[in-house]
Amino acid sequence: MTFSLLGRCARTGMLGAAVTTSSIAAGSRCSHVRTGVGACLTQHRTDPRLGPLALDLLARGYDARHTMQAVLAVAPHPDWRQLAVLDAAGRTVAFTGAHVAAEKAGEAHGKDCVAIANIVRSTDIPAAMVRAFEADPALPLARRLIAALAAGEAAGGEFVPVISAALLVAHRESFPYVDLRVDSDPAPITELSRLWREYEPEAEAYVTRANDPGAAPPA
Image (cartoon, rainbow, N blue to C red; front, side):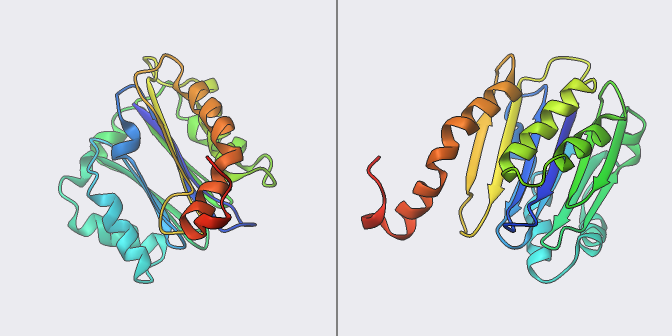
């Protein structure tokens, strides 16, 4: 009952994740991104410990494929997990456990992106998300990630309404470039898009406030 996408911007090196689901607080459990390292999604019967583990392996020099192999070698109850990994070079890998595959689940890979979904109306949803993400590489990564969520919803979405959505992007710093979450909302993807439009003009200013507060514009 979740659909999501990991993406990389080849122009800027930004890495990001976008996720939506019919349960609360998806962003706090499913999305994991680290600057210059990579990104991971963990969903279905979610184990939030697997995201940081994957990022640590990527940071040690593992590529996406070997990271997934190492995570699955130690992950408890892997048959209940659906995972995706994107490394800093844009390589991707996904895994859908046997108990997840028994339900409506799917995955799709594209240039610098991977989408996964489970308990959704159509197994074509990940491919629709990838097409939306790839449509205009010149757009900011955050906008491409949100467009992917919207495309997943338009392609069928879940069997029940989604109520939470999250956007997480890492750029040059150790802290997120953007970390926005919507919970218990009747239209969380639309609200996430609105929040990004509000945050986008301020995003660089928040980075400046951290690095050179005297040069930062007033709040």
